[in-house]
Length: 158
Image 1 (tube, rainbow, N blue to C red):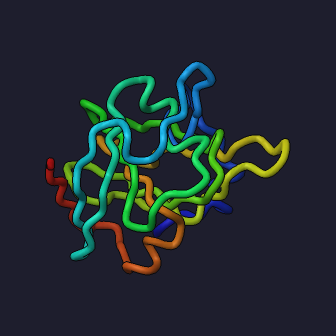
Image 2: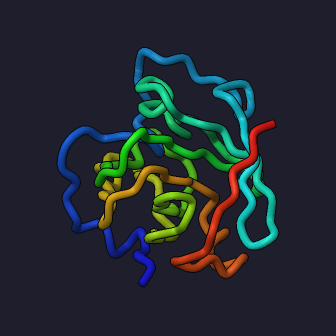
């Protein structure tokens, strides 16, 4: 069953925080599409333009400090091995859906994760199952495309 942003508000994340937005203060903010490398992802016959986050700096910055993201875009966090990786929404300015992926199959879904408001602490997420990729899409994408656990994702390099 998919988790929502509301469901995970009370869950505590352990270990190093990654992604969606850890918005490292020493990293420059670059507009969407300028970095890092881009791939295509195909989910349920929908093609997305996906930035990849492989390095520590790319993972820490994630999508943080961006005001919006085009509806057919996203960011994938690539890990060399499966693990239960921690994420948080620090620096985020728009809500996200998370696809927790193992060997290009969706293993878990978290939808409508809100950005922090005011002085609220950022939402923290932890993978329920070991994954090797996490894909962040605009909130509502999972519902709109009826994406489900078990769906396959095809990644294509440009």
